[in-house]
Amino acid sequence: MQIPLRLTLSVLRCALVLVAHTVVAQGVASACSIGVRPATAEEQRFYADAFAAFQKAAPAAPAGWTATDDIHPGASNGVLRELCARPNERVHHALFRRSYKLAGQEAAARRAALERKLAALIQEQQAATNAGKPVNWEAFDAAKAKAGAEFERDSGAEFGFSVGHERSISDSFSPVPVPVGKGYRQAYASSIGVPHQDLVIVLNPGTPAKSGLKVVTISGDPARVEALLKAATLR
Image (cartoon, rainbow, N blue to C red; front, side, top):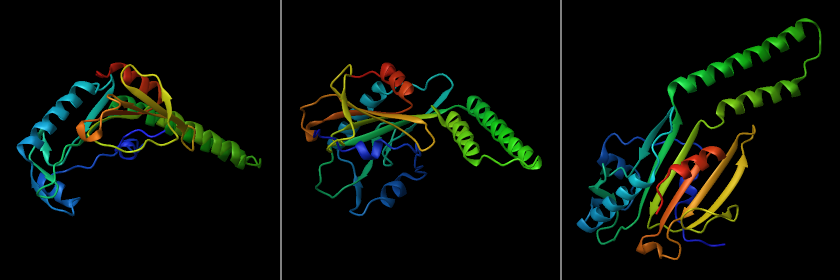
């Protein structure tokens, strides 16, 4: 199963960590080994159109969540000023990510609940030790893992939008019906049992990547992925 797609590995990560670029020129240069140059008028138009499409497609933050966009370090508000490219290289590809994170109040409540559960587990084990009873470390570790899974579940998600990239999609993804284009999904659980799902949607299958292949990726808790898919504006 081979689908043109150049962003699968970069977008479908669970870490949900964004790199901050405090100075645009330094942000581009730090990851560039071939040279930074000003974007051409054609590249600026392409990037502006891709950014506008991303803004229309990406869902807003759900209630109780925050959203942060990760865009090209040489761009600001859809305007591409410079990029990492050779002087005569024509750059017509763009990648955007919107990361969602559980907001402060709910996140704090979850953390407090986790701390209470861990404290109770420790007290139980200490009480058993003081009473001369054997400690069931297997049960203790299982209870810790369960508490950690409850804390981590559905606490972050990511929406990616790509234009003009290509890469073969992994065989770990299976075809799945989607409202637009072709969809592929993989589901798994973390080492402590937190469920996770990655969804890839090729909006315009059959289009050569260099002509503007458009791909959306959504990653997170299975229910959150479905909710973001429903809220997204795909065309």
